Amino acid sequence: MKKILSIALASALTCSVVMAKEIKVGAVMPMSGPLAAYGQVTNLGVELANKLQPTLKNGDTIKIVLLDNKGDKVETANATTRLISSDNVVAILGALTSTNTAQTIAIADKKQIPVIASVATNDKLTEKREFANRVCFTDSFQGEVVANFAKDQGYKTAVVIVDQSQVYSLGLSKAFEMAFKKNGGKIVKTIKITSGDKDFKAVVSQIKETNPDFMFLPLYHPEASMIARQSKQLGLDKPMFSGDGVANQTFIDLGGDSVNGYMFTDFFDYTNPPSQKSADFVAYHEKETGNKEMNSFTALGADTYNVLIDAMNRCEDPTNSICINEQIKKTTAFDGVSGKITINNEGNATRSAVIKEIKDGKAVFKATVNP
Image 1 (cartoon, one colour):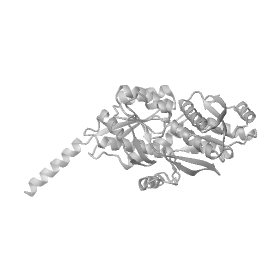
Image 2: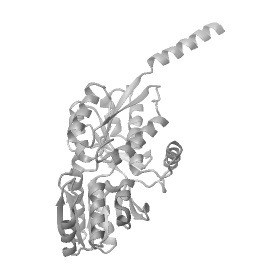
Image 3: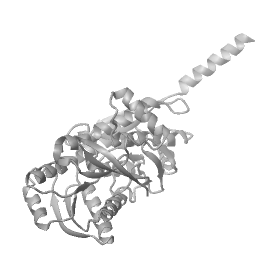
């Protein structure tokens, strides 16, 4: 009898091993190029989350297939096509910036492959795109956060510096301007720049002439840090505020003393984890990297992976991309590393934001803002 039971048990174990399979999930990130600082910290979150939870509840193993888009639209399109056509991924995480993520979504949507964006905040990103999702807030929410903060500080006039080559910058500037004007504020000047610009002396001169209460810079860190540096060199001393595009240590390193007092919106602060799960992940990050400080993009990267796994676990067939997408959009009060996340039928997340200020070379938590 014992021999029969042993054979039956061995047979069951063998079947479970045979049935368990490897499922590929794509990741498109700028691991090199001008946006590498964002891609590397976001991908770290994906990797750590995958290391903590490498299998589904049915025993299937998740393999992350990472492709470097170098921060480029064409590279993004090529990477997305390859992941779907050659690697047969069931979902894609990325591609970070709104411009590149829109490229990924446009291709994936036609192939019915769900995309979960980590930090792509442009409002229009998910419009009429059934397979588009995100775990970050939108520019309209982020813009209101900045406008309301400005109102609380008594700021009544602002200069906005917008990067005309980035949909992120265009969308965030528009959202801020609407909310700021609604609060009774006045935009005294909007100055257009282009990614890659390095000489901002003329920009600084224009701002000095208009003498605003503060400056809003919905930019990425290369341009924002140079504007901060050149402002200090030319004697422009006005409060500066950005969105999540400067939420990385590279911005502080590039800006140096010039960015002391600089404020920005962010998704997460490692010194104020919103739950025990979040605190545990921060501790795991320190254990694995030796670094106590954890970037907010790392938290968002982890959340894209964790939300995806949660959705896959709710599908009878975790390789069914249509089911995965449906379950992603049923995510409710998910206990993420960066906080509670609810995703609606349009793929947009409801979540909180935080405000930080740079002091002595560190981004310091100021406040949490709930939707």
